[in-house]
Image (cartoon, rainbow, N blue to C red; front, top):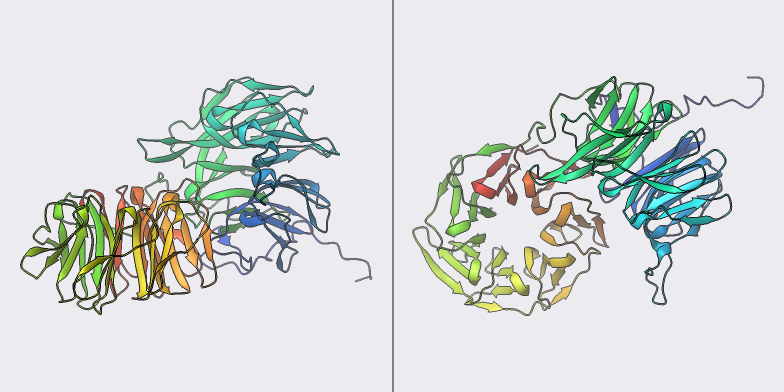
Length: 613
């Protein structure tokens, strides 16, 4: 060395800095060291020779300086959706509640949005309109777009509102080489800003909800997004090419998951989307790449090393090495991924609503419509006599060792091994949805209209629950520590004396609750909502158009949740992973044996089995 400052190679700065690449990785692998958990959601990133920024929910701004990760201070704790800048001393971020941040090379400062009212709550004003995308040019001018057709332009000094002539939600914006700007969003909305500053609507025949746009050579633009199809029971992706005059849907014969982001590499265009799908688009073909994840991927970032990075749900942060764009997945369609579950013969086509594992006798039961009760015996499912004529939603061990079955009209039936008899009748049109017992004679039941029943040895008594909302799931550590979950994020907590509210910070319906201890509790619910209580506070994973998760349970080593359209997710102690089931039937109940083998039950008598990991 001659004493001069060493020049850091632009291509070498990040290479190998994200931790050791696992031997089993094939192109994409998770970054080591990023301070992220299962409740984190990352939306975008930005990199230069000096480091990398990754942004997401809760005002998360994580910075990597080539050696260490740090969480940077954010003026507002709201989701940050997109980044753009000419350099790190002129870096912009946009997000929820109209948030606009500026980074001057040292700190982030709030420039706009997140206006609060006299009560300290976010005000209902235009400035708080959520923003989702930003782009700009080398002269420092920038455009940000968001809900209800919001378009903002930065003129070098101020952010000014522009009228784009639409009220559609806008989710993508790009600057074209000739000085024009294009924005796109819901229901096929595409608007173009001419060099004179006037916006005009373009006639796009594909009514997709566009989430990404990419400028291509010769003035062309590739748009990506997705639509919900009832017959597919889910979202499907759209790729649409604009050649400067007209729009044309690409790969019409190929089924994609909903697209979230686009990027250009030396091998072609890369797309990211739901269920961990990554595709390489080039030479009139679309090849699916092996991503190694089933989580939704939301943002794509080019690194100075020449590699690429993908970020998304559940703290997903993948870096792609030199093999990332050449390692192809099998040619399978969405929903056809290899399943970790195997289907069992249930002997019924009735809808199944509940499952229960009796730990004392190591027996497994399922229940459902028209009094259906099944028992798993010697590897096969056999039907017990019907428990009445009405639907049964849950089962529990009776104090005398028999079986209790509860369900519609507030009925609880008792099975003595030979026949059923009525154990309790509420005489009300209220359904019991869940039961729990401590195994020592204390039994609780919960259901519609805030119903809570308690058996303490002699009779069933109705308890004041403190809510009129439906309670779908019930779990307890002991008879003095129980949780019940229900409508609009309702969580009620029993302390042995009374029921009190236990706020989790979500308004999504919660359908089930399970825990290992009072400091390790999980809840699941509407649109894939997953929450975890660590003993101090709840961490809620935001829901974004996922299938409802209806039931969960676990062991000391993992947790599994199941739900609508055959959805299943597994938590391995670090992250949640989507768990292909091979079915589109709704899964409404789950149980696990002492060996760690899981069983799930649901629509049309469906019963699945998953071997222990």
